[in-house]
Image (tube, rainbow, N blue to C red):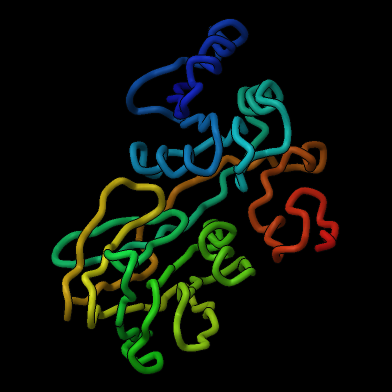
Length: 258
């Protein structure tokens, strides 16, 4: 199989592969069968931008990695070479503004451009107004995979299906919303300017006053490698299984006393 390795410490993993799997795994620079994400959540987001829709194998080399299997790289590579895996589709969001499109595997954010002022904006969901003019730091639209990140830090909750909308530091007492996957969200900047960003992408789009951003589920998706089967249950990545509220340990599920 042909693989690309993504991550700050990719040379470390490359040396191991060349030593132990010289005939089974070929490290390439383009057209891979898999992307080995050797790092954490940020490595996955980076890999998806550079190798969209290619299956991603998550190998933990970071403290923060919601999508990583809880086992050693050696075991993951052995299961991969043996073909003991399945593929799990992960949806992406897309935001369109002024003939530009950005994609988010975790989330898309419309935020204020100035730290010492708030953003005034209106929101429409499926062409229906969602409340009146809002004032705050902006809006976060999240996927289930990304709900354990920025979305959780705002709402203290996560979700498994649909699209999540969180209002960051809103003046009005607004609750977050979990919407169907086919929902269309429009955000109009009343007083900004605002910034449109996605995931950990360095690309930043400025949205002036009176302009509108449209966010929906994308036609694009990506694939994560999932180690399935009863014998390999403890190696399964935790997507859909480790979505728990704050004050609960993300690893063991026990209540954390304040």
